[in-house]
Length: 500
Image 1 (cartoon, helix red, strand yellow):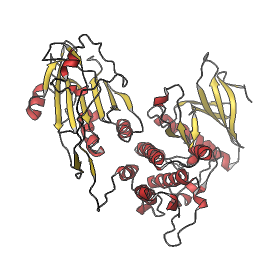
Image 2 (cartoon, helix red, strand yellow):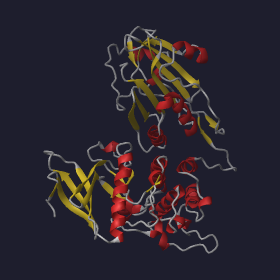
Image 3 (tube, rainbow, N blue to C red):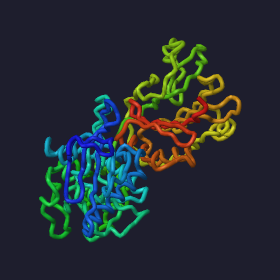
Image 4 (tube, helix red, strand yellow):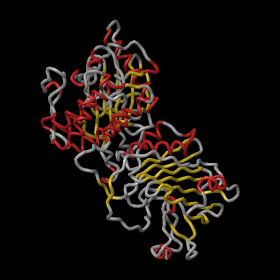
């Protein structure tokens, strides 16, 4: 079959898997000259009168329907290119994800470190939170269905091996439910080791995915499948954590709760498990100390006119330049070229690092107004007072407003306004790492209003948990970016597409 053309377009390079009802193929696009793009093509052949073949047909349509809903919205979900009938056969064409599965990674290099496992858990939990928001239960999480994505066309520094679940044939779509209590997965070896007790009984809930993820984490840490561990006769839990360093007891506890046999004993959502994983365990015998955070540094498109020298400065998002003696070295950069929106083009302000340490305080709720696009300068001034800096913007019809340290050492705000209408056309907000995720979400949601979406929240979480360095987005007539800068701060900005 190698070399055969499908619909005079896709040339088969390799057969990846085959059974009585389906084939999984690696192919290239023969209609694109010099194209290096690869595709995964799933071909399903009907067998009349065979109940298993009918289930496979139903799963294939379900996979196409789910991928169509989610395709192109998240880098942890394979992109769907097309699906079609050719005679009696059904074809699904999706993105090929280059890289190793978690199972292959462990088999080749041995168990992962606790730090690597925590990073993978953060990323997969973010993925689960995203698909659960669409009413989709994955149901097939295990080491063989998650690939560590390697985009070889990217620079090495950007190849962060993002975990990508690749099998969507067995998902449960709560918004389009069908009678699928008995589902078959003939394209991927089906290990019952990794499915939850309730799933074995034909019932799936969101916590079922957390159970499977917990067992996957155990495999990554130990190199052993769940069936290789003995059970505690009382709790019915696996005896696995004896091999994990004692100082990682917090990670063990998070995993232990995820794999509780009773659904009610597990985390109620992926978000709750994310919060638990990233919470700081408190040792009552010793106070937790951490450095007082640096003042915030950010990337930006802002250009302001220095009041000290009258020259043009390229500065950070929110223009966080303290007008002191350090400013003179920036003032010499007269005529500096305008910075494009590129996370690589980052200018930083010169701030000193404090060596003072302080006791960690309990998290507090921060409530400040993050004004959306369209708000007037007057309204902002009424609630926030005079800005730290009010200068001419880079564009002739704009002004740049800086509210530095609205919450000291935690949050700063910046705005570009239209001089004709005095309305905000670009809004920026920056957070230090001492700000909790809930507060960040609240402020961003307030900034975005009706344009806030699960996709934006997902990318915000990915940046917060450091699974990606940044993401650009577009919603209606608004463009924006969320990213982490080199100083480990979180920066979020939106702007009117027609303003610049």
